[in-house]
Image 1: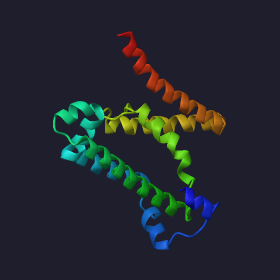
Image 2: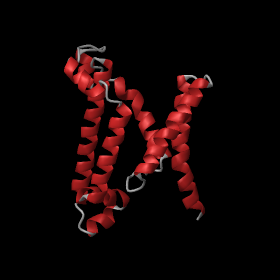
Image 3: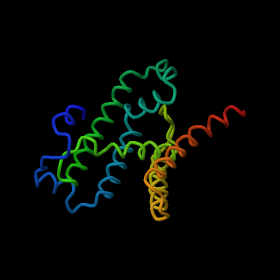
Length: 178
């Protein structure tokens, strides 16, 4: 990202037509995403790697004592994240028709807010696919409603930030009361 900004400070280049047609052609993106989510979730639940990822996120010490390769699970989590980010970057580049190293910056807060709204824990080991999808849908609905009510983009970011803070603070507050 940083080197690309030094070399090319604004979007440029061209995406080959075959790649654009393949990734952003006639196939609905939501359908492709849904199929990908279901396949990855099935693999996550049915493979030792998936169970290791879940265990290492929930309780790394307990997972290590149970024989789970916690360091390997963490490396795998970062590798999977990188692969999915690459796929998302290719998809966005195919849709826009050019390369822009900062085009995905706006998606970061949305991704975190959707995950937190869906009950995904910041440290891992918590959450479900249904929760993540519900959080995404709820966030999309919230953004659409704020847009139609005339909220500025800055106000939308503030609202998302408050949602993240609330979603993190409420469980901590409940733990402190018990």
